[in-house]
Image (cartoon, rainbow, N blue to C red; front, side, top):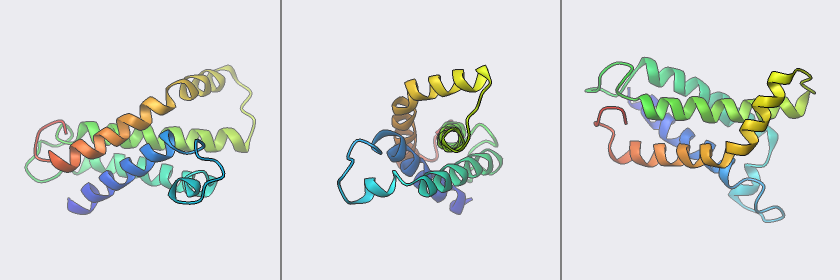
Length: 133
Protein backbone atom coordinates (compact mmCIF):
# COMPACT_ATOMS: atom_id res chain seq x y z
CA UNK A 1 0.00 0.00 0.00
CA UNK A 2 1.52 3.26 -1.17
CA UNK A 3 0.50 5.56 1.73
CA UNK A 4 2.08 3.19 4.27
CA UNK A 5 5.20 2.99 2.10
CA UNK A 6 5.46 6.80 2.03
CA UNK A 7 4.82 7.10 5.77
CA UNK A 8 7.43 4.44 6.45
CA UNK A 9 10.15 6.30 4.56
CA UNK A 10 9.21 9.69 6.01
CA UNK A 11 8.95 8.47 9.61
CA UNK A 12 12.13 6.39 9.38
CA UNK A 13 13.96 9.51 8.22
CA UNK A 14 12.41 11.70 10.93
CA UNK A 15 13.04 9.16 13.70
CA UNK A 16 16.62 8.71 12.48
CA UNK A 17 17.22 12.46 12.49
CA UNK A 18 15.64 12.76 15.95
CA UNK A 19 17.91 10.03 17.31
CA UNK A 20 21.12 11.14 15.61
CA UNK A 21 21.05 14.92 15.35
CA UNK A 22 18.76 16.16 18.14
CA UNK A 23 20.58 17.69 21.08
CA UNK A 24 23.81 18.28 19.15
CA UNK A 25 22.91 21.70 17.88
CA UNK A 26 21.52 23.26 21.02
CA UNK A 27 20.88 26.95 20.59
CA UNK A 28 20.57 26.84 16.81
CA UNK A 29 17.24 27.47 15.17
CA UNK A 30 15.89 25.24 12.46
CA UNK A 31 14.63 21.76 11.80
CA UNK A 32 16.86 20.04 14.34
CA UNK A 33 15.69 22.35 17.12
CA UNK A 34 12.11 21.14 16.62
CA UNK A 35 13.30 17.54 16.97
CA UNK A 36 14.35 18.34 20.55
CA UNK A 37 10.74 19.10 21.51
CA UNK A 38 9.21 16.30 23.63
CA UNK A 39 5.84 16.51 21.92
CA UNK A 40 7.35 16.25 18.45
CA UNK A 41 9.48 13.28 19.53
CA UNK A 42 6.58 11.32 21.02
CA UNK A 43 4.36 12.00 18.00
CA UNK A 44 7.12 10.79 15.65
CA UNK A 45 7.69 7.78 17.92
CA UNK A 46 4.05 6.72 18.10
CA UNK A 47 3.46 7.24 14.38
CA UNK A 48 6.66 5.38 13.55
CA UNK A 49 5.71 2.43 15.75
CA UNK A 50 2.19 2.22 14.30
CA UNK A 51 3.58 2.51 10.77
CA UNK A 52 6.00 -0.33 11.52
CA UNK A 53 3.10 -2.56 12.51
CA UNK A 54 1.13 -1.55 9.41
CA UNK A 55 4.21 -2.12 7.26
CA UNK A 56 4.48 -5.71 8.46
CA UNK A 57 0.81 -6.30 7.73
CA UNK A 58 0.64 -4.61 4.30
CA UNK A 59 3.76 -4.79 2.12
CA UNK A 60 4.21 -2.94 -1.17
CA UNK A 61 2.61 -4.77 -4.10
CA UNK A 62 4.88 -7.43 -5.52
CA UNK A 63 6.69 -8.26 -2.28
CA UNK A 64 6.01 -11.28 -0.12
CA UNK A 65 3.72 -10.65 2.86
CA UNK A 66 5.64 -9.95 6.10
CA UNK A 67 9.07 -10.66 4.56
CA UNK A 68 8.90 -8.07 1.81
CA UNK A 69 9.29 -5.01 4.01
CA UNK A 70 10.97 -6.48 7.05
CA UNK A 71 13.95 -4.10 7.38
CA UNK A 72 12.00 -0.82 7.15
CA UNK A 73 9.26 -2.21 9.41
CA UNK A 74 11.80 -3.23 12.06
CA UNK A 75 13.52 0.15 11.76
CA UNK A 76 10.15 1.87 12.26
CA UNK A 77 9.40 -0.28 15.29
CA UNK A 78 12.85 0.30 16.82
CA UNK A 79 12.81 4.07 16.23
CA UNK A 80 9.30 4.37 17.62
CA UNK A 81 10.12 2.26 20.67
CA UNK A 82 13.27 4.25 21.48
CA UNK A 83 11.54 7.63 21.15
CA UNK A 84 8.58 6.43 23.19
CA UNK A 85 10.74 4.90 25.90
CA UNK A 86 12.78 8.11 26.21
CA UNK A 87 9.58 10.12 26.55
CA UNK A 88 8.17 7.95 29.31
CA UNK A 89 11.52 7.74 31.04
CA UNK A 90 11.59 11.53 31.39
CA UNK A 91 7.93 11.71 32.46
CA UNK A 92 8.11 9.32 35.38
CA UNK A 93 10.80 7.61 37.32
CA UNK A 94 10.99 3.96 36.41
CA UNK A 95 12.27 2.20 39.49
CA UNK A 96 12.65 -1.40 38.44
CA UNK A 97 15.95 -2.78 37.22
CA UNK A 98 14.79 -3.93 33.78
CA UNK A 99 13.84 -0.37 32.78
CA UNK A 100 17.23 0.88 33.93
CA UNK A 101 18.98 -1.77 31.85
CA UNK A 102 16.88 -0.98 28.79
CA UNK A 103 17.47 2.75 29.32
CA UNK A 104 21.23 2.21 29.53
CA UNK A 105 21.22 0.10 26.38
CA UNK A 106 19.09 2.67 24.55
CA UNK A 107 21.42 5.48 25.57
CA UNK A 108 24.41 3.48 24.37
CA UNK A 109 22.99 2.49 20.98
CA UNK A 110 20.65 5.42 20.25
CA UNK A 111 22.82 6.98 17.54
CA UNK A 112 23.40 3.61 15.88
CA UNK A 113 19.65 2.99 15.79
CA UNK A 114 19.20 6.46 14.27
CA UNK A 115 21.68 5.67 11.51
CA UNK A 116 19.91 2.35 10.89
CA UNK A 117 16.60 4.22 10.55
CA UNK A 118 18.14 6.72 8.13
CA UNK A 119 19.76 3.92 6.13
CA UNK A 120 16.52 1.93 6.00
CA UNK A 121 14.67 4.99 4.75
CA UNK A 122 17.23 5.68 2.01
CA UNK A 123 17.54 2.08 0.87
CA UNK A 124 13.79 1.51 0.94
CA UNK A 125 13.21 4.67 -1.10
CA UNK A 126 15.46 3.56 -3.95
CA UNK A 127 15.12 -0.25 -3.85
CA UNK A 128 11.53 -0.87 -2.74
CA UNK A 129 10.76 -3.90 -4.96
CA UNK A 130 13.69 -5.94 -3.58
CA UNK A 131 12.73 -8.52 -0.97
CA UNK A 132 13.65 -7.71 2.66
CA UNK A 133 13.99 -4.00 1.78
